[in-house]
Length: 81
Image (tube, rainbow, N blue to C red; front, side, top):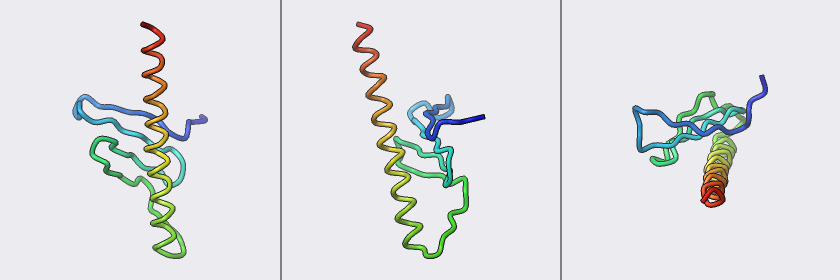
């Protein structure tokens, strides 16, 4: 099955939180509200600094994607009114 790179998720046990799931390596779950990341893959690389930079980039991409996705929902709501 082909999955999108990012998925939005929520859970009734955490009603105030919104999650972004990154489905490609390195996979992670980002709690957007708390700005916390749970890594699902072990980050491997030649040096720690490079891996930290890459991790920062993919998490920033998750926040950016979430903002863009939520803006689409807002546009759809505005169009429906």
